[in-house]
Image 1 (cartoon, rainbow, N blue to C red):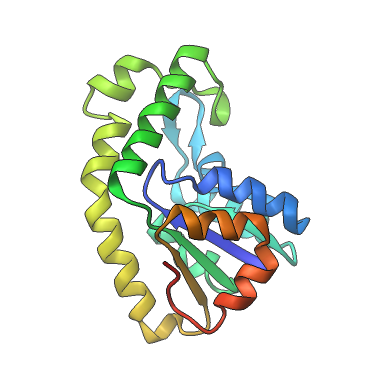
Image 2 (cartoon, rainbow, N blue to C red):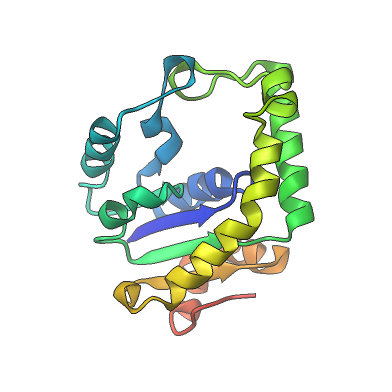
Length: 186
């Protein structure tokens, strides 16, 4: 099985991705880990795309992340795209909670990077600002992608409620099988 989990910052992609990878006994791949280099330096596209291609060479995987420019690579063989489209209030609360935890505990992220309260909350690079301003555009992009016939080979599962997310986490195989004939799950 090849799964890509997408959605806005803070919607729970990594948490769900790690859970599904364990439950389905598949490798977990995080696009942010392939993209970010030390000192929050983005990887150049040739290196980033090569890392993705290498990571996705396994027969099955759970991948989390958007990065629209990577779609031709990551969706060439993907079977299921799970779009975490939870309510805006919930996503913003999760971003705030995650940012505070990471900053206060000094958690090490990709390539040794760390979030700081100042940068995360009070700068132009604020993850909260990013999450707020990107919710609408991300929703519009994924609604368009789901309707695009060039991606008709993909099973799209749109998670819009805690109830659906809980059901997916409880029994991923059964949930995805039941959702296989639909384009959206509330």
